[in-house]
Image (cartoon, rainbow, N blue to C red; front, top):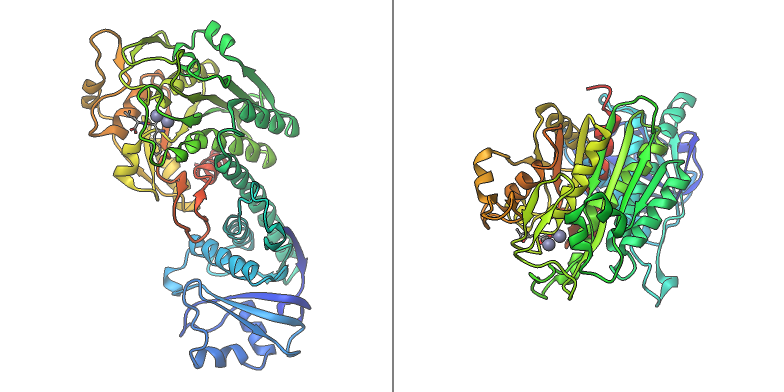
Length: 498
Ligand code: BES
Ligand code: ZN
Ligand code: ZN
């Protein structure tokens, strides 16, 4: 989708299709839809009076103008009740309009945008583009049949009335594109099957991003990780023939900016290992590298938006498989932190590889550590698939995440890390066990991770629920979602201000 910004008036603009938004009746028309209505001799007003278009949330109605306007067609899209409107509804409405037009075979359109109610052209344009790009995302890479039937919107013109408005729109469009394309990259990686998206493929992707964005990159193999003392990561990686990779990306190195470490769980396939999972739905476990994909996307955005922070992206990437070389329940592992772990379940592998990645991140003395991980099925039981489980040891960091959540619509909910839960992780033979009880599973996973950050400010995002969804949402088609990317990017963008 090629998105451009032009200056012009909606009612005078010649195009295949003009996309207009309106609140639900009886709100009076305002902004571009009102200007078009005047030029169209009250056509839209009459439609609404007669109940042919009500402006209900996500309602889409297509009309031909028969020469009454320079635009050949108009799509009216409802924004719902004015009092309930927010940027998330706006993202949803632009997505729904985009999906409707794509499915109708429309390839080109123009969208006039004007600020209102304290919402600037820039933020409206950013969210509009986010809705359009994320809502019309499709994963067709492996479909070989009927490829000519795949429909796509090719060209979008975002229209501003004045030169100043055009400039503001261009800012918003640019940011929206950078962020949404990165989310789609993350989705592609997660939707990609594990025979393609291997640890080495993740490392290659990281190299590509590093090269493109002039970042530093280091990729350790399992022998190098072993030499450093990453006994937990190595134990998991050894069960697979597919070589593990420990990836470190660094942006703005040595510039004296605040350092933030981003750690992403990169299990490219989680069979459970010897504590093998039931076969039903096991195919979903290709999504167990959603945290890693998010970290790659966040690093790319940070660099493209020139966010003034020193970021270190750390991705332990490996499969978790059973084999003659696989680690076993009862094994004791020596982690990079020096602490030992008794393996109870080889299916609690995420916290093991993350323990070494978190410990590794301490080398950079980060002001904050943020990990993203599809860590526990228990988090899905607790919060469902709309919500990220939010954990952390620092109130101001937690607040930053919650503020970013309100802005982006990526929902988070706090869960506690109280000391009492640590009881469950005590081991008779090592410092901890890797599994506690079934109850409070998400919290116990978080408690385990907390033992490896040395009390540094840290956030753990359990994205097991929302990383991959079975049903379409307004601007998130079913499948991989790229969750966490917009949330963390927003938090990083706001870092200096809050
Ligand atoms: N990758 C899974 C968590 C998961 C489960 C993500 C379902 C998405 C959907 C993780 O490695 C795992 O298997 N966790 C175990 C932990 C348990 C053994 C303590 C779980 O949640 O059952
Ligand atoms: Zn597992
Ligand atoms: Zn896992």
